[in-house]
Length: 453
Image (cartoon, rainbow, N blue to C red):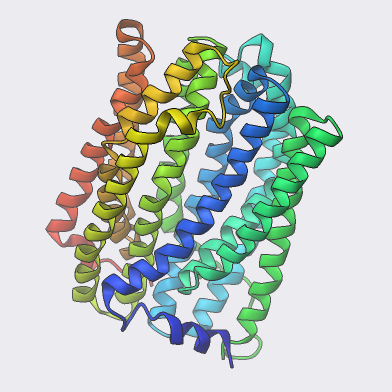
């Protein structure tokens, strides 16, 4: 029995109830991303508890930068997944398969270029980020090792996007669970037993991510053999590459600039010193966790939209979009309760009793304030998902850039006046404006006249 047949038995984006299809598809993505964040959190917890607060600040100050490179991988994955999903929905298997192999080749080249760039300019980047002297050496160590693992990062993200494009969100989940468990074990081994400090958590992540990426690659090769296609297909086709790039470039620009903007915000935070940096780093970890289910539902909407657009089922896309609101509201309510009731308990995972009061208060205040507003980013992600899945990337890219501009401008303009709180006061304002722009464009119906293939 082929993997395609197995997938149809459990989930079919083209025929299942839209709400059921979105929820079942999004759930493994949520769990997978939670596991990914789990081992990222373990990095922070191990560093904070077994190294020092300064070491946590060093890892935290690199997060915004590493997110830029992840954003390039994700943006490229968006372009490929839309094209692959639409070919899959239209049952044009030859072009679908060639789009997959073309994507993998493009990602391999891009990852090597990005890795070389990062290794060459590591010190200059950290200097530009206004990284304090007392955490500079640790930040450099962590970042340099991260760049060596860049090809694995890109390969895994590309393959995850491809699996999701085919309606399979379970395989990436299984690989992430394996990778997370391995990463935790290696963290503890390298830091506690071998006393490798910041280098230990970086190497642990590199090894775990590398093994997961290689395993993903071989699973995908087996999956491709299960689809009936014309013998002797080319593994790279310029025509398909151009289609992918046409959608990927706006997404890469949007993702990269947004995360570059977060670098600017991190620079504002750095100006308040290492204690505030540690608190902000801890709070940001929980923000990343809370955003996971929202982006997962948005990704589900994107895949749902792409497959149904390929099949010519526009009305079904609209039903799926409406169904996504119920899922988002339920998730946002749970997040709000957890953040308001348990933020003090949660923050101690990163900052123990010996941590400074300023670091502790910064993290708790950040978490409690944003707890009320995650529903906004959920609505934003779903509206963006429809536009992205249809191949209409320009408007949602502009909306996200405006979101970024608001966050950066507010942070720089208000931080000298009201302090570090300006950094998170700007967040819900940006989310709201982003959502309204994407939603108004959705209501216009112009997205439904787009098609990537």
